[in-house]
Length: 512
Image: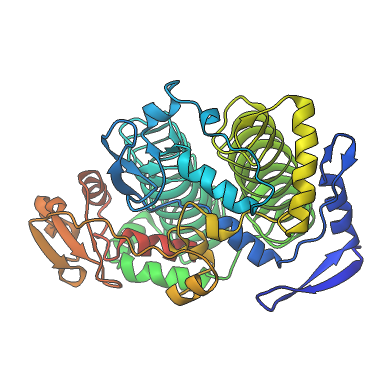
């Protein structure tokens, strides 16, 4: 049982508590430099505001056309062309034709540190999109080994997947989220090992299921819930194959899908194989308190979307072999580190972003295979540890030590980031909170025809081939969107209606 040591009030007005277990963790994760431990005190913000701040550094889905600052080529990038950063295309960035150590800075003890870090970010070349081993998948962002994919985000090892997020080892998915090892599915959420499943949530090892929730080892089910090892069911009742086919042919998928989402919006399946875990969608874990969406965690708090993590607090989007990490977002195989963003294979790294296979870094940006660097400048081990001590003492005097990077120096403006999805703010609220608001819009694509979504034929068989040259006006926002050839072929194959809403709206409805 945790003992409450202190009650605090966040700047947002929410009250939150600090317990004896929290203090034990902060003491355990506090770094040691030159034999001196620098204790990390309890946070000043509530857990939600801390998460909001981390998320404000992550642009996931907004892609733009701009020029590569090294080659002059037009590229696809997560950085809009009006931003004050150098951006390199993939091949150029990963090449040996430039060195991030060339952009080093000496620490200025007369200046605010975060301003110094902001200046380092403005001169060090950025990677246009965060992808690796992508084949015919330039309109994607965040992660690796995808082929023939379009508008796919935070996903790896997929083929022919479009308008989806957080999918892995899958083929031919459209408008899916958190779907793994699945094939030929549409509007599938939080599911795995599925085949030809549509408009459904929380399915496992199932096929040919529609408008259903929480099924395992099921096939040919429509509007079913909480079933295991069943087939040919409608609304949890057994039917003949002919009855199934007849009922399926009469469904209005667009309207029924919204009913399903509304019905199950606040429902979650029970945690699996967990001990002392609070909140939901957790499996194979012990002593995990608050937030959800992961597996194989132990002794953690305030974590979301995680795999294989121990002894860590305030974490988002983490995977594999993590221990003693604090207040960080999107990383893999990071240990004994704090305030990290988008980094891989790190040890003893603090206040750094986009660093790979490195250790003993402080305030670094875009470094690979490096150690003992501060603001991208190389030091000896002794020089590093002595200077870090001085920097920490200086940061403590101006209240910068122990807090994540402020949203004001994010390389993305607030309304571009996932923070705006989880913590939506108006333009005025963004600006009043010392964050940046983006009003940039991609130029409109030339099209042969513009049609309101309400004018689209309901039956896919009535949709003409040249719809791929049209712009469809979203029925919610009136924002135009297109249907690509691969998408049209999918709808025809599975007799599905053309969507009436912009992909961004469909995405928001899925995460809602």
